[in-house]
Image (cartoon, rainbow, N blue to C red; front, top):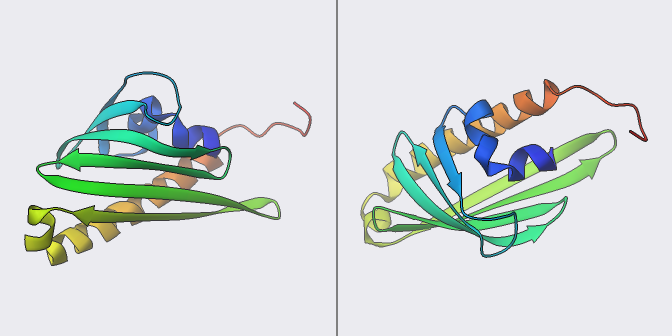
Length: 128
């Protein structure tokens, strides 16, 4: 699951919300990536990378600054995934309710898409 989540250049393959991604370097804190969604282009920077459990980035679009974090927690043979995002900026304050509604729907769809993508991956016996 970790590899699917942090391989941002492949997000468009499994996340319908993401149309394209350009990554400016390897997966590490400080790496910038730009991604297009139906809402516009977002410029993001990895802030925290703690494999295989935690990744977070900041992003900017249309004067809105966002912070997005993912936490993966082993739970027996499964993994629990938690994600959170916050917005800041004048536009975010003015459109707080509609943005919150849109964000909730987008995060829910993203979680469902991640789950589907991971479940469709071939399973390898332990040790491979």
